[in-house]
Image (cartoon, rainbow, N blue to C red; front, side):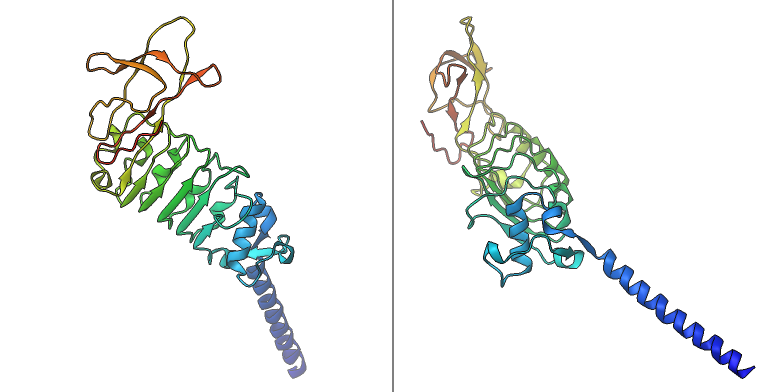
Length: 272
């Protein structure tokens, strides 16, 4: 009888050990995601994440992007940049796997530019966002990041800045070099009343007409004032208080007219 009890106890202990091993294996597997290359289709983004997690490895030839990465490792990434590399990041797919990201510095050039912010809305720890000289047209997803403190979107193709209106934590905002003609939605932001707000040299693009019809342009600053464009291509005439007639537009590629306008009265630097 004692032998049977001893046998049962041995079996219970063995089963307990097996269950514990299986549980640990399951936990380890659960914390392991896909490979860097699978999570981040953009190879430059995959490399920058890899470099951040493995700082001792700098050369691309030493990287193993097929290597699996854990959630704990991805949570180590707090700053990401492509400033110092040859090829720029073009696709942010997978950035949602970096939940602790606080600072994102990217800058487009002839090697690549970002056009979509998809996934960025999940970064609830992000405080500093700099996306210069990219091809971004919509910033609607930034509505979901009220914790942002610094935003630099210089040199994009943004027309609507209304998504920034609720970012009350902003202390620095630069939207120069876009296509904005109306800043009235930002009038309640404290940052627009400081020197850390810039909205210079907006490129206003309109289709050139072939019928000789006048085109009306209205340009509003952050205080609700109508402004006259400066450094423009073509001739403008005031249309009362409603805007400006574009009477003889300049052309680019025989299709578009592009005047450069300054929206900030505080610090206006016109470019021609």
